[in-house]
Amino acid sequence: MHDVIVIGGGAGGYAAAIRAAQLGANVAVVEKDQLGGVCVNRGCIPVKSWLKAAETLRRVQGGEAFGIQAAVKKIDFKTIIENKNSCSEKIRLGMEGLLQNNGIEVIRGHAAFKNPAEIEVDGKSYPAKKFVIASGGHSEVPDIKGLSKALLTTDEILDMQQVPASVLVYGDQTIDVEMATLLNAFGSKVYLATENRHVLPHEDQDSGQRLGQALNNDGIEVITRSSLASVKASKKEFSCELAGKKKSRTVKVERVLAGIRKPNTDDLGLALAGIQLNEDGAIRVDEYLSTTNRVVYAIGDVTGGTMQSHAASSMALKASENALGKREKFAFDLIPRGTWTFPEVASVGLTEEQAENQDLDIDVGYFPYSINGYAIARNETFGAVKIVTDSEYRIIYGVHIVGPHATELIGEAVLAMQLEYTTDELAASMRIHPTFSEAVVDAARDAEKWALYLPKK
Ligand SMILES: Cc1cc2nc3c(=O)[nH]c(=O)nc-3n(C[C@H](O)[C@H](O)[C@H](O)COP(=O)(O)OP(=O)(O)OC[C@H]3O[C@@H](n4cnc5c(N)ncnc54)[C@H](O)[C@@H]3O)c2cc1C
Image (tube, rainbow, N blue to C red):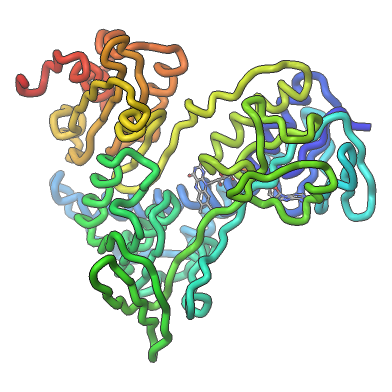
């Protein structure tokens, strides 16, 4: 009998298995498809490889500002795809090797619970002392008349040999704006429609607003407060009716990208194991990542929340440690969020609106990239760092960054918040000049009301 069986070999499951093995457990991972899950094979890594190609294209196109005159001769989609595939393969091979190196058994097939302490994979039973469910998520297409014929999926985009002439991206989440960015960079006419007032509605309003502006500046037509009512096929295109609060409009496009990420909870035998779901369909876990079955833990996309890879792999560590004897809470409030657009968006902790809704007394510090020396030298001045802090004790409640390297810079904020740093401590710290990281310290100084490089208030 195994000490721990992990269901799913994606970002979460892989990390859970290795951590459990490091702690001396006899571990197996069950995977029905490819090791690496969505992140390595169809998500984070392939999208970043494509976005690097897009960034390279943008750099060539924007070279004139630096006195470099160059023309793009050809976009070789085949090479982009080969490079993307080889990135995924490298990581997958590395994962296989590390699982083996840690003595972890990989069971191929579909796992489902038979009873509270046993799973079945292709007719064979596997009991274990503890289980970790890391079955991930999938994209669910909204039920909109006519949509299925026009539907473009992220999987298709990642293997495209040419871009559609025009696309409606219906959605405002991270993946939607990243795909809009990618398609736009390679020449599609992109409409991005959201029912909300801003894209990225889970982010601080300033971030959503700022990103919306950047997308518009880049030629993506952002259509807010509109829902997709119907999709009708005309000759070569689809007419998409977008119903606004007061008026409707129709956009004509070749394809429509639409989908909402949902947890993978079907066919897992959860009811047989006494595992309950939340109202949103995600597996219910407590602060220790334990499900309603005390020997079963769940992590990553299948638990809903911030459906991002680092959340899955971070939850994995805590779930395996707790499964093997520890009892420590998982810090849900320290999960950072990242969006890889031009410019990037990243955040951790409370938004200004959330802090206000919780009746917290707050101060807010800002620092625009337009005053950061490194940003000026690189001609990358769009964006800002925003810090939400307690007005009395200076505890950092949240940090929100829109701008180049935001997804790297947010690590500073995660560390500061994890170590319960205050804004006055952050304001007093030093960074290399010139770097983007100076903007984080400058935002803290603004919160402390002594920003050196901003006009006096
Ligand atoms: C286009 C796209 C881009 C993304 N970009 C990013 C990004 O840049 N950064 C980021 O942090 N996140 C990103 N994400 C999200 C990220 O991919 C997920 O949050 C992450 O993969 C979740 O990891 P997981 O381990 O929970 O699930 P998954 O990676 O989905 O892995 C689950 C695994 O379980 C297996 N499985 C499922 N059910 C069973 C079963 N019953 N038996 C056996 N095996 C099973 C599946 O085959 C799969 O391999 C992106 C997602 C998409 C779609």
